[in-house]
Image 1 (cartoon, rainbow, N blue to C red):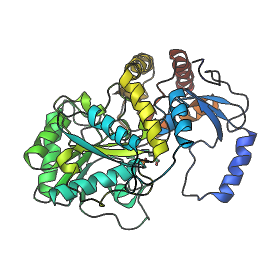
Image 2: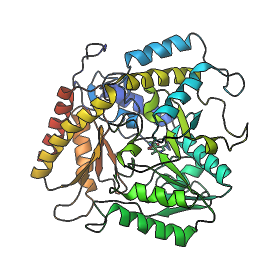
Image 3: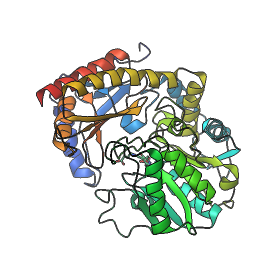
Image 4: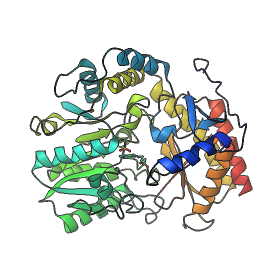
Length: 444
Ligand code: PLZ
């Protein structure tokens, strides 16, 4: 990790948050809307590789990547070089007015590396929510139908349409006005909480029964599903669930949208998490977060005939596929294509899984360990029950933060700790972070 200007080591030099962060936070409380929360109010000055440096000089091990964004690592040298080069050359034209090459190049990459052996096309936006909004527009336009099915525990964004698609009304939607119409939630496959022994096929049939009764197929445009749910708690559906759903959708003329905003782009040890399920064939993918090493850009990629059903001028936005963000995306995608990145995600899983399984054997608050690659999670319970244990998660998150490990919670019941480290993290740093976590468990 010597390519980074900051030593890849954990260093706690003040209380966390330290005095400089506390002063900045006081300013923030005066200036910034209360609507934007702050999970850990330490103010970050720099981040390199897998280390985040705050205003007080504390160095934290990053196990969150800004919620799965800096997958390639903070200030990945190729990304920095590509951005610096691009920003000095061309920062904006608006692609739909006067286009430029790297937008097309990002689309070519995504068309090639998303799963599905058919002709694909892409269109670029700025955020995950914007990609999901547009995937819904595209599916509705192509099918001339309105209904959208989403799943329990889902998260798709904070805009009016996407907060209406989230499972949790609080905190995302409640009080923010009328929800969007024609959206129906159906049961997800949640192996840890479903009836014992329920197969993926059975869980899919349960969802299909809901869809057929509550929505009907006549007006159903699309099913939108995260192949591994992110905010919901890294729920990995039982094998057979996604395949059965997509086969049913195909037979009924329903578009399947895989929301890979959190799970995509090398995160899970595959290009896209949808590949973990044999026979699952999404028509459209929404992609964001990890695609550009921290620069804001997102995409909808999928079947050419569905993507082309939208009329010229129907899709777009001023900043979508901005050339500087696109340059960063090309730099990330080239590194994944060159090899080693996806393999690193798989290797990280082995380190995390071994440590977590050992902890699970010792600490009965750990109910479940799940995930793929560098997208792993622990679900906490009250020992001997299935009752969610939010208190344990809160205590552990606090312990990790105080000891220089940046860790994120998740889950409908806030009882999940998720691991989304940058893939640039070394085994030594990962183990150091796991030692901190384990000390917190022992102290519970
Ligand atoms: N779809 C699957 O995970 C974003 C939310 C952070 P945006 N998840 C992190 C927060 O609290 O706002 C996400 C996701 C999935 C869509 C989105 C939305 O992506 O880039 O945040 O709009």
